[in-house]
Image 1 (cartoon, one colour):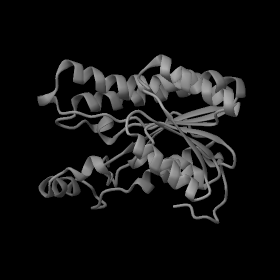
Image 2 (tube, helix red, strand yellow):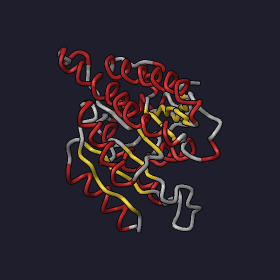
Image 3 (cartoon, helix red, strand yellow):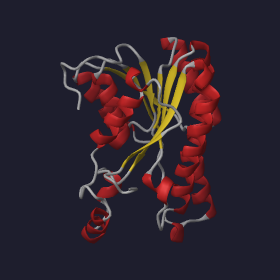
Length: 252
């Protein structure tokens, strides 16, 4: 984790982090703020959680504001990006941290569609509207959040796995489209991370999960924010179209 005396790699960079109200998104937002960025905290539902993310950043002398928006809405996403451009005149980094899940045995058709819309269409919408401005800037970093199950699949997560596999397809295709203008597009595929999503697992389920992980532990939100911060940095300027698995070795 970057401390207060760290190098400010993102001094005054404008960073949009979607799904930043809690968990991985909140950790990513905090990481970029610590390194000097101005962070726009996107969220769709929980005002208190988004307020907490912003307050924590401000308390650490960072710069942040929140913006409520359903990223699966093309129009709402377009308005959010236009607002950021009007206020800050540029967007340097987009982090698509979009996650919605559901079990197939309890899943109705509308539930399947909702997960695909949020995870897949939300990623597309953000890239579609941000890329318009990054192309003019001739620079930009886009990091999409996929998942270990988007690579390997998982019982009970059919729609989630499909959507996160689709995010990988978007990542590779967008990387080819945008590379000539100095824009890189990569994905991070987290494994089992210690967040609210995994806290609901029973002890038996957690043991089963740990048995699949060579490093024998769940990841932390900092493990993910470290990878994202690297991919957004100048050190990763020659990396694009890649999927970085942060999963403790699950996909070995």
